[in-house]
Image 1 (tube, helix red, strand yellow):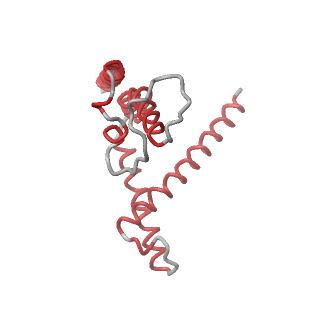
Image 2 (cartoon, one colour; image 1 turned 120 degrees about the vertical axis):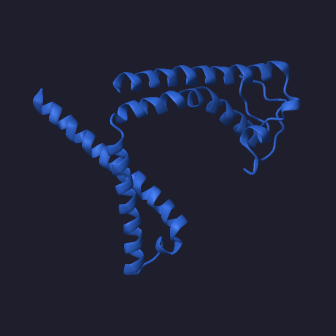
Image 3 (cartoon, helix red, strand yellow; image 1 turned 45 degrees about the vertical axis):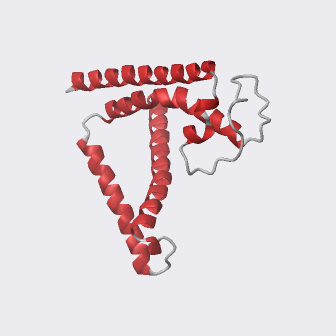
Length: 172
C-alpha cells in the first residue's frame, strides 16, 4: 500500500509539472507579446534572456501568490463555487445559440426552437448574446427559459459562494 501511494504521488507531481509547464509557456508568450513583442521570435541571446526573464518573473509572482494564500484549496473551492453556475447552465446555452447562429439554419436539433433566431455569421464584434439572439424576435417561452437559466445561475453562484466564504471564515 505504501509503494502505491508513492507511485500515485510521483504521478501527481509529474502531472502538476507538465500542466504548469504548458500553461506557463502560453502565459509567458502572451506576456512577452504584450511587453516585448520582439523577444518572442528573437534569435539573439539578449532577446532570449528577455523572454527567460519574463518567464522567471512570472514564476516568482506565482510563488508569491501561492505563499500568501494560507489554504489554496479553499480559494479554489470559492472560485469553483462562483463559476459553477455559468459553466454548467449558461455557457452551454450561449454556445448552442451561437452555433445555431453560425449554422446555415439547418441545425437538426429537436430541442429549443431557434426559428426566431436570425441566421448568419457572427463576426465577434458584438457580444455573443446580443448578436446571436434577437431579443425582440424571441417568444415568451424562450425568454422565460433564458430568465430561468439566469436565475438558476445566480442561485447556484450565490449558494456556492456563500458556502465557500463560510468555509474560509471557519478556517481563519
